[in-house]
Image (cartoon, rainbow over all chains, first blue to last red; front, side):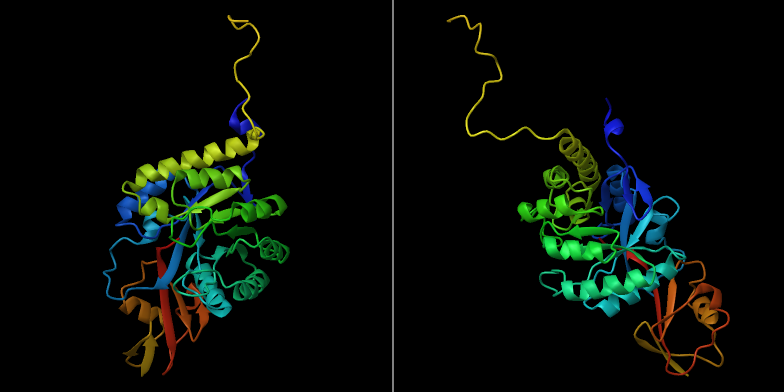
Length: 265
Length: 66
């Protein structure tokens, strides 16, 4: 039986995807490095940020969307850097205009610049407003199961708790909460933020997450394209292990080789 | 007249549409979005909307992010 026979594609807001790894485009040295890493990761959904156009830049220099053309990837504009619901909604409206009506967005409303921890109050407010405006909202949140459920019930298309602080590479700091969120979710759940290396991504998938979103761990690896490939394989391995179901843990040893028939019996 | 363009005070001569502004900045081939006074101006209306003194114009594009 092949993997494809028992798994189903990832489905978010009516769109389906084969890859369960989403990647960001920040922190790369240049577009070539980003393109190689994204290709190696096999990601189909790619995040980006919306910022003021550099009016000094020459018009024929390539832009990010030349690296991740909208006809090849599902683009996921984020609201990174927003601290209020109002700023986040404004950013999403700009993103929708930028992408000719594309309405899938990653909502993140931050609490402070040091922790980049989500401001849940503003996040809830922004989610309500964006859903009202017809956006499909994939929402970055903390690892609180009640908040995750609340965001789901308000109509978010996917809920994305942090593993640890954005860009910290500290992996999954509260696997108990993360597991609770995954077990109780009725919409796709993704671990967003904190993934430091391939085993973190595999663990998220083993906990039952539908996908993971990785940026810094790939972009800041010594060899980003190789880490992109490692993340792809880790997500596949973690997903397969989740579907396979892990063995029960035991308090004591149990031999793998039978006792019966030993030569000294 | 004076407008605020991406946070910087900028002088414009005479009647200027958003399309004129985008053209003068060499951005016609680029994928951008334009907001005037915190309202989106759809691409299809860039020709139709003229800027007025004191307008706050934002022109944004996609950059790397996570």
